[in-house]
Length: 154
Image 1: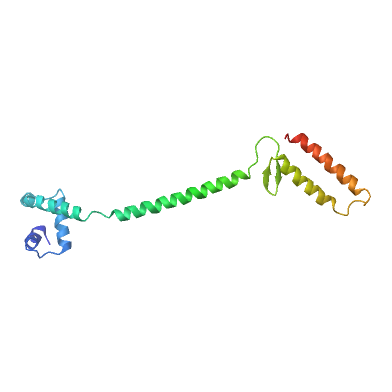
Image 2: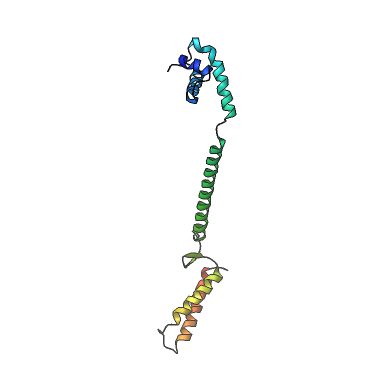
């Protein structure tokens, strides 16, 4: 149906919403012929009033922004927690350190305590004669601790 044929039913209130939208789109364009130019201000006005009374939904935009900001926050938390956990297990590039159970330790007291417990566990085996065992274990632990003190300054 041509635009000219829609105008009369439009002014009589006999057009559908789809036909009215078609008329508004036509008169909002720059291709309006000179003989129909007198109707353009009317349809421009109606279109602006419809837009004012039915603004585009900002709810959808707000929802999208909230979802994106939530996703960004979750991503930031995951990346931050990853770096924090990996940073704790990193050893210094220079200096002395000891790896105990997969973690890097530079604290001399923790290292000494763990080393004493480990050496005691090793010495509890039946590898040594019973009379030589206590002396050997004590000497071994003392030698290791002296070497340890040399490596780590308290």
